[in-house]
Image 1 (cartoon, rainbow, N blue to C red):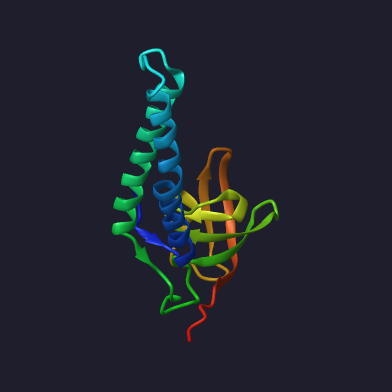
Image 2 (cartoon, helix red, strand yellow; image 1 turned 180 degrees about the vertical axis):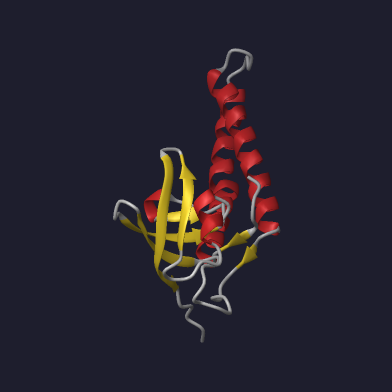
Length: 162
């Protein structure tokens, strides 16, 4: 995945947990299964062996990706200097031209999640929202046609500093 290298602390922790699980739990399990399958003899027709080797390649590819991606990440933990504008990490309440309201959070491309209402800062809506303020109106070309929106509210999560 390419795109912006910004991520929230929670997003970084999720990626690190995935990397740890792949490397310390899943890879050793699959390696053991491949060893056991290889001990059965003819590998050319051994489905468990062939499938296990494929799984190992997929795990190794994801591990390489996560290590490289995490190495270049910038964890954003503080709200911006001007919290009245939309920047990375903002929760933005919007209303469209049909009166439908929704609340989205601007996050990095590695952590967007429709169920959580997280949108990527690299998405068309994410890019358009940047630097907007409350009451700003804008239009956006969506697959269903052009839609108009108005920014109702902008919030940033507070970090607990000790």
